[in-house]
Length: 572
Image (cartoon, rainbow, N blue to C red; front, side, top):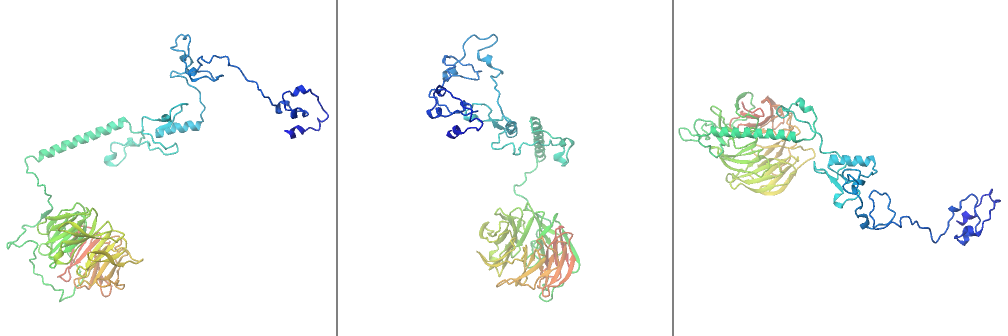
């Protein structure tokens, strides 16, 4: 302020006004000694007043009086009792009380409030889309900070920029569910599901329930007087005339004396199509010969049935086993052929009696089994190993239906289990493109067979002399390994030419081990020479995928194939 007091305009330096000391009454002595500044109002300069004037307007108002609620200004500091005190005085005509004369709305008094358009739209859309909004009242308790809609459940935390779950829905036409085609009325957009729509849905459900009750009543009437069906499920049907012949021999016994000529003669490639077994309504996944004699042929179909066929005589289906609810993936005979195992996509493993068709036992680990192998030891025919979808090879005891051991090292579903070296070693392959070698009963991997160039091997077959194994690789090749010792890879024994990628096609060996055969995705049957790895013959076998092939162990030039067309064909 000293600088401001010393500042002077050059034009006003000559202009000097003298004032009396009384003009600066009440000012500080230093400020009073200053010269006045030309052109500056004295009111802008600091003035010190020890006793400022006090406005006494309203001091005369009696504090005990009631205050008008419509007043915009209160000139005193009233007590809460005075503010809440009711008005007193004559009630105007047509009014109930004095407060009513100050109301401008039937529900009370409405006061104007300033709110931005964005804030109003935000609360409006939040309330209608998500069922809640901020309380617009000036004063409310802590529990009433938000207003909640009574029509829908509030979605707290969601805002106007979030998508609403309550979208408008199409009204389904009468024939939408039945035919899949949209009705003209279904193109109209309706609002949310209202009471009318719910009522129509209830009427449809009630009508359907009434029809169901009426149908059940008719079925009950139809079976009145008839014998009650047995609670046991019919699991097998015998298609022959008698299960025993005149001499009392069972139908599964071999009555044809076929001499084994493999030892004397070498196997020859088949040339023509001889016979077709037809009975499966869907594709055939697996076929197995009856052990040693091969006078019966067992087939597993995708229709959930297992059928056994006569190889000699009339070549018809002798018995159908119907224990599974879904497609059967693999089957395996015991050593004597009196019993066999089947695994299915219904996650069940069933132990069958071949002659009577009865299910001896059913067990499962709640995982889909892809393959089954029986221990070769005649005294351990109750021990089986299954490859499952839970990346484990599971060893079972069929007598007690319990899990004995789990071989858990694979990183994908186990596709094959091959028992080698008279039951001492186990070879498993899985979707993780690896082949593991195990000691039987010990869940520790002995050898890892894994290369960066390897593909998944969904099927592995052991040679007749049990010295080699061949596997169907998913890069359209058949690869081979030794089946003993160090299980060395046979790089020169690779068979190419067929198309098998994407299908678990089972390859096969000839009875003398000279030929290797396999089906392919085009339904062809390929034959290679084991020694030269050269393709010698290709036959068009099936309309769809040729999924499996077997060489007859006694007759040197007989081959049986199965495919996804549901047919089983004999070639000679």
